[in-house]
Length: 201
Ligand code: GDP
Ligand code: MG
Image (cartoon, rainbow, N blue to C red; front, side, top):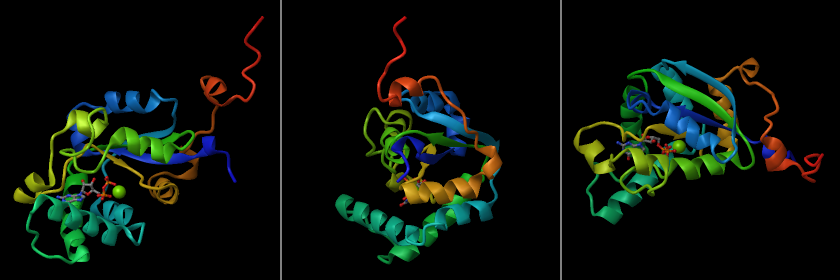
């Protein structure tokens, strides 16, 4: 098994995150716990690239539809259909429009349990219910009901991979191998060194 400190995860600052001038704030929040930035680029994704990104996981369509149906039941909302795949098909069309509306910033972050840690910092999908202290909870107020009323995707500033398998596939989808940089960060000596020796003169 690879050491947990080698885990890498994909983060994409969505067009609304760029327009809200939150690039620096988002990077700061990810750097803070000790994650290391190993790749970074700004780009204009195509609709094809976005559709592929969201459907890399064959289960994503079903899971996303089910998540939405569960949320609607809890809130007593009526959806146009109860079929998770049909729900996701509608979401995906809106997502493609949203994600190609302007530049995005794609990044790869490395560190122990990075996928889980980044998701915790980013917060839940719907900003209305994501926790205070998370990026989505602190910087945006969107909701499913508002997005559905206006016929658009939920604007939640960031994409972050959901599982470590998703991370690996998504990193390959956004970056070439030679765009990922292997380097040592001095702070890692404090985060990961076994003995913490070599400091005293
Ligand atoms: P994430 O992993 O937390 O980003 O969430 P998902 O992978 O489930 O969904 C991907 C993206 O689709 C979300 O970040 C939202 O921008 C959008 N989205 C997801 N579910 C819905 C929905 O029910 N309605 C709308 N309008 N957008 C959604
Ligand atoms: Mg997801």
